Length: 118
Image (tube, rainbow, N blue to C red):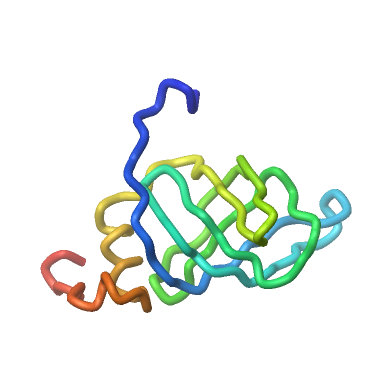
């Protein structure tokens, strides 16, 4: 599926995010904080604040942008505590704009919320 998909350009951003997954089978849900470093409609790069074993499939939440439960698959793990993930669905233009509005990155200072866009 991913080999035939169009590659989207990743844009730098700085948003707080949360990874949610089940531990020990279906015993309980675990949640870990992370930093959204780069994002595109199909994938993202996350900075993990602590070392822990991450499952292959999990949900990503971006609370400040009010985006919840984006199904994600782990594609690559880097040594500098960053991971690359693919989303199970494409993010809409509205969700991408919402991420950039709440980003702390200097490139997105001029993004504002437009009432008509929401």
